[in-house]
Image (cartoon, rainbow, N blue to C red; front, side, top):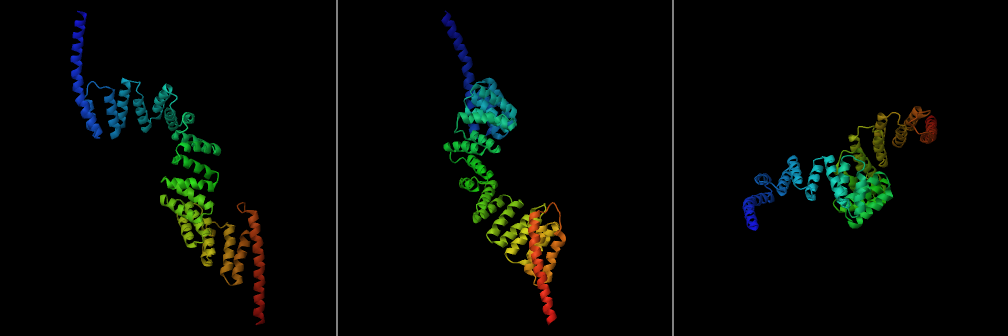
Length: 399
């Protein structure tokens, strides 16, 4: 009698439940198909028709909202999905990831903290928590990156964060140890290769940095910084053709940096490509809003290498126009005039002008040793020119 009563109740329950399940299944089939076809708005409408909604339905609605960019709605449905079953880690991870995307870093921190509390042996949970704290400018972030890397020394992202931490602290040997350990498991990680390259660059170990920057280019991981840094390394290593090529590549990314043109011009001077040097010095001048007397004098010196004395004089004068107290420009102007003019009296005037302006100077901006050196040479040259002028006068009188 008892069993008969129980069977009747079970039959009645199954009768009430199964029609609902059968009714829901077509809705899920339609909604899932629409979702797979990326018809996200229609998929959401289909999932919304399902009643009652289970965690899967809420999760699919959240994913559809995320896919089409309605992120606030996506967050709300992730929360609804989590509320049904708080034990599903994948849903929490998706929710925390979207919190990071929407820059809700403190909320993401709380979710990842809960995940770490459940499983503190998961290196990626540690890394994600560290990233949330880093975005929230929490200085404890590094401890979670270190823990992630300690748990798994093949974890590339945590390895990069730890290596960069020590690079900022200028702990160069530690940087190499950590980055190289990460590269053991993935030798083509561009972020770690970049860290090692920067490590050598900051130490001014230019030759050691070169192969690492070259590898970044070989891996197609190129940008303005890589080309400019490699150019500087080649430059310092006297690989002039390669330096010029890389400076020009960096300029393609950003043609508004005066220093880059100046460095390229300096390379061209060393290559004796003076016309190219002048073009780049002049481009640097056009971009500068700073004092440019040094640049004018560099252009003058480049013309001096070509023995184009008239142009050298012109740019030395421009340097002095920018800064009348520029003693080196005054000295160079005198030497260029000496080479250009034939008349010893004209030459003498330029040297005397230096003596008039800087002969007894106590200008704190002028280096005493350099001033003494210039004065010694000029005094000797003035004496020679005065002798030459007197000799010419005697010749004239004899005639």
